[in-house]
Image 1: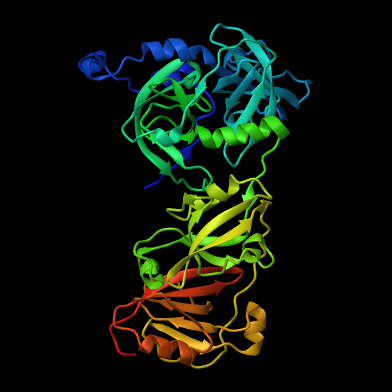
Image 2 (image 1 turned 120 degrees about the vertical axis):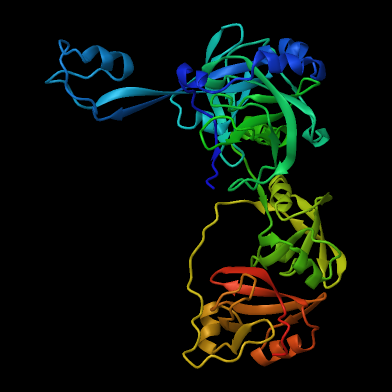
Amino acid sequence: MNRTFVRPAAALALAAALAFPLASTAQAQGRAGFLPDFTELYEKQGPAVVSIDVTQRSRRQQATPEISEDDPFYEFFRRFGPVPRGRGGQAPRDFDQQATGSGFIIGSDGLIVTNAHVVDGADEVRVRMSDRREFIAKVIGADKRTDVALLKVEAKDLPKVTIGDPDKLKVGEWVVAIGKPFGLENTMTAGIVSAKGRDLPQENLVPFIQTDVAINPGNSGGPLFNLRGEVIGINSMIFSRTGGYMGLAFAIPIDIAMNTVNQLRDKGRVTRGRIGVTIQEVSKEAAEAFGLKAPMGALVNSVEKGGPAEKGGLEAGDIILKADNRDVKNSNDLPRIITAVAPGKPVKLTVWRKGAQRDLTVTVAELKEDQVQARTRPTPAPKEKGKPNRMGLVLSDLTAEQKKEAEVTSGVLVEDVASGVRGNVQPGDVVLEIVSKGVTSEAKSAAQVNDFLGKLEKGANVTLRLKRGDNQFYATVRLLNGDN
């Protein structure tokens, strides 16, 4: 099944809009007695919602055939495409690419919020108010990581929205969007909150609000209101196989957006915090191996040498349960919390280490673009493979050359993985540590690891800290029922 997440930015033709099925009047009237009245919300908040038209100027080669004005097809191309030049005309020509979106006013002096993808690459941004006034907007700044942009128009005494608290939003609560779908200005659609804290591919800094509000191309950047008329999100993305609404829409929580907006307003760019760790999700099996009652937190795979986390005492194998006095329910919570902390600020971490909680303090650094260098993993020595152990792994001691190549001082090489073994373990991985029932043991030799396994009961979960290339991570494997 193909699944696509789409940013509904560019407006489509009105004919395309009319091709989408609409709910019948009878259906709407039949449910009227069970629906809230949105009229007052629309009247009060509608004037603070704006339409945004973006122009991108480019140059291209003339792609249409050379046709004279006497040709019967000339009128077709003039109306429905670029007018072809006659013979002798210049092939390269300027053309304007148009796109449209929505936005909302947060300051009566002309500050406007929209999506970053709406104004990306724009040469001109034109803002149209509900009273038909138009302004050329300046892009103060845009942040692609959160998909938020801040615009400014020269105007005074503009109507503005009220910012709400998305943390108080409940699943099942009614919400309303106002925007410009398919170029139809000031269109209101309503629905409910379907879920909160949605994690989407490539979007780990934003816990999206999922709704079933009808969102279509042109709604991007528009506000999502609660019934109190407060903005609690920015409509940013839809799930669609067709490019149009299919009942799954996603909004950026307004607190995340306003953190970006405030930084763009104050300094024109966004800075984010980092502590220098790589993390992964804590599975049910891993929680059992580390002695946790339930899967929670963020499991630290590796700690950057000389980084903030190492200086604060954080170690690989720690499970971060709280950060900055906020619960880390899953691994995606941690980067959202840390990136929101100003660089240079100390942050308190509560971690689970060797069966007990402890508190650490780490001074947050500024997040830079990651530079990843690919390295090859150590190659097993060419020799006859041994017998799989109780995990179904064939292990061998690392040679001095393999240790140097893997940049480790100790560890055990995975030579082979038996069929039927479930877990992210591959030949060439280096086992650094082995964890079970809250007990952690360094992997010093194949014999020592196999001896450790021999003392465990059948079917026990064993978590391995592995090194694969430059990456370190944890993988959980259940012991086989045999006695090997």
